[in-house]
Length: 414
Image (cartoon, rainbow, N blue to C red):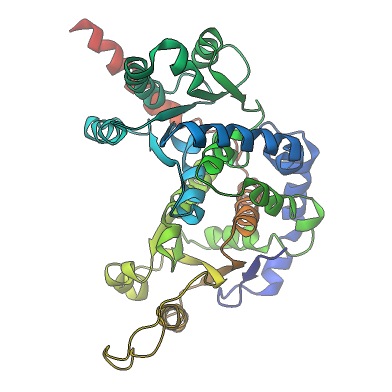
């Protein structure tokens, strides 16, 4: 495993972690046993073999050749992982720009996306595991109407790609009847664990990212043996923090392109662990920007949190600060200053008694991002199982959906 976990600054002893390793091993065994529902993602990097990757790349190339814009309609796990990877890795000169919609009810946002499509060739991708998601299906109607006016029925179907469960639901039945391309989402994989399925891989491939390397990075650690030594100590540490009274885990990044990776982590951990009065509240901050808004709180605020810093050893590029700049910055590089900020914040926070976990990858490339995705999925699932909750359901989500649907139904009465 290329990922390195540093726990030296957590104030949690090796003895405390070692005492919990049997519990993490039991959780790991459950995940690999197949006895739990929605654990298809555990073996997915191997199950989604090279032939399937070639199929995804072939479809992506077709979209790139025919479209200036690829509009992905999905909410939650149906878009967050893909956007996180695209923000991190998409080349600036990508031929086809990937846009995301269908994750909010903002008319202004939809109008802005539609305005951007004018004069462009467009394909759309509709992603919904259930095939009935309110945000996504509402937006689908709007964008399908736009497509039909521009292309007509037959060409719209050729430019429409649907990712859903392979069983009867509104979206699957509609796509089948109209002849749209359907990519199956396995029944045993939930949305927030679906980045390394067609849900994430198709938009990521259209954006010009090497999905072969992304999957191979995940494959490199997608085995029970990869996590059988001390590789689950992060999951154990999180639970020790929770049991000791910590309520918040603050994910921190020193690269702004990680911003949406932080959003994906918030969904992954929040929806997996936040049940039965349990679960750390996941937050994310972008440094050095947020040091000027939250730095004071982190340094001297209530001690309800611990920090998890996600960092990259080797930056992919750098910029020298010219000699005409103010000293002592002149002659240094931006990334050198960034490293000084990272080290300085760590020292200051540790001296203040704040527990800090550091998770590092060697390079920011598709291989290591794939590894990082699978790493966090495994840590999250194990952490939830250790705490005694089911990582793969979200019964609380249905509460707001039920109330929202009631109000939507009442609109027919007006």
